[in-house]
Length: 140
Image (cartoon, rainbow, N blue to C red; front, side, top):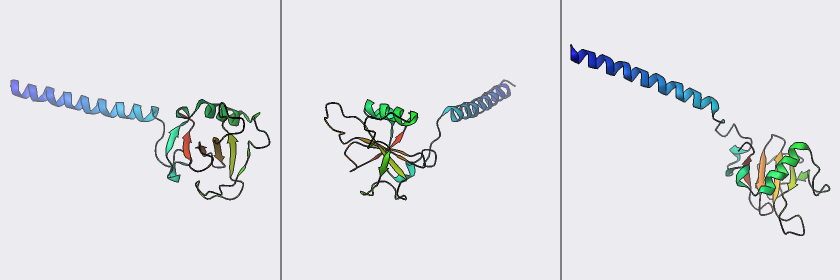
């Protein structure tokens, strides 16, 4: 009789653990940001994905200016069409991409750093004047 009771208690405990695991998994899935190539615009480009907070702090300032529509430090350049002549970013029609200066402390000109936006809400960063790009996740 004692053995049946132990088996029953163990079985009930196992069921509670499984149900608790499902509940925790469901709660975590709701709170977690979406993942996968389709959830972050540009992530399917094959370029490395980084968080905005991992970039130089000036990139966060430029992103804030983009979000609020300016004013930009280089009004004749910021917000202009990026031609993607290097073909590092995915091929898109002319006018699809826009570029914005990311200030470089100590530089007496615009420097090499840029944020590039796409009409599909993509956000890219280059620190080497278009030789390479990173996909930026502005949510992180």
